[in-house]
Length: 69
Image (cartoon, rainbow, N blue to C red):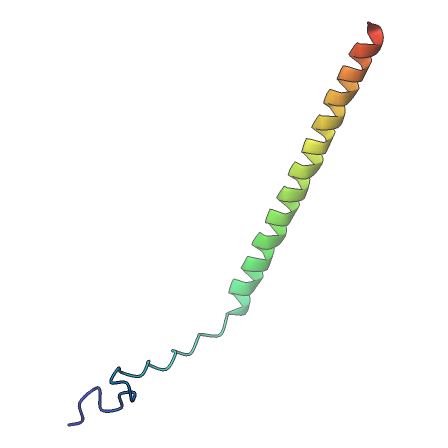
């Protein structure tokens, strides 16, 4: 029987094992990832718009209040 480190590198350390082949992504999985990514992007855009509207509202309120004085 050949010892497991018979193919050792010249330095005496075992050579690294070849990388395991990655499984091909299933179409269903990638579609779910794309849908989740689109939903996250939409939520982020909606939050950004809500923040912009809130800032505009606060500035409008403060501007109107300053005019009344």
